[in-house]
Image 1 (cartoon, rainbow, N blue to C red):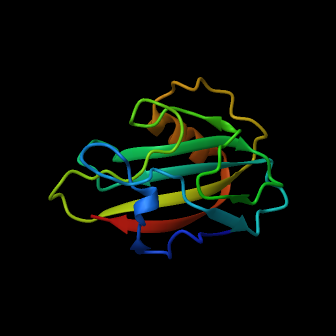
Image 2: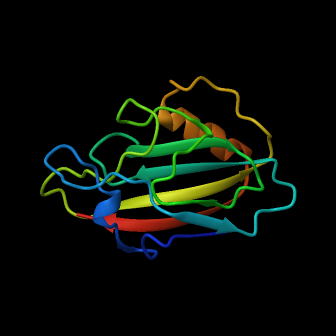
Length: 152
């Protein structure tokens, strides 16, 4: 599998469009454009997780979790209103919330990972803690690809 974005290059700077508009930040808080290809033929669904491993919190910070994406979907447009199942982020709500590292904390890496799963539907509560969701996704993953943006 391969994931790419028109919003940023791998290991490039996360644009202001994808930065949170809160906590003193003035971003537009739009989810980025993401496109994936070469999904395995035996995949039954997809999942997308955006995670910041550099956040000063056990297990990092989860910015977006989208599950039960059909395998014929291959792209999310920037700021697209997602109609697939989303679970709670570390902001305690569903949907994308952008970069918001603590001031002076240094560079943070925002990993956008698409997973091909061997199961058609992950049947979990939308209030399930993000790390548990990620562990469940990984337990059903048959392939994955990550694109990373950096923000300070």
